[in-house]
Length: 121
Image (tube, rainbow, N blue to C red; front, side, top):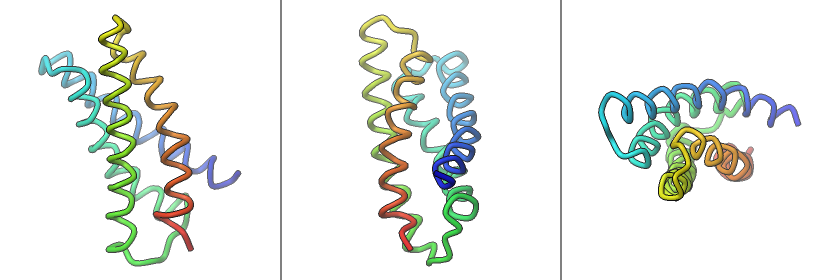
């Protein structure tokens, strides 16, 4: 449970960055919401990697092993998020609300993958 609480704290910071990028790209850049969602996810993932490596899992293994695994996991989460946002917008749901749903879904999935694969001891 301690790992999940720490993962959620790191995720909250990374998610705030993700949402800031998402909103800026949609509102100022006029990007499609699903593309902005993916871009925000990539940016947030870089912050999340560092926080999860050192704070959440206290991982001491090689970065060259964990970083590509984390990026692959983040890509799965980003693609899930992009799909959920695209579907939400298509169903006339505001893109931020769709992103909230996407975030909740990807949180559970990526935590499980990162715990057993990316940062496994």
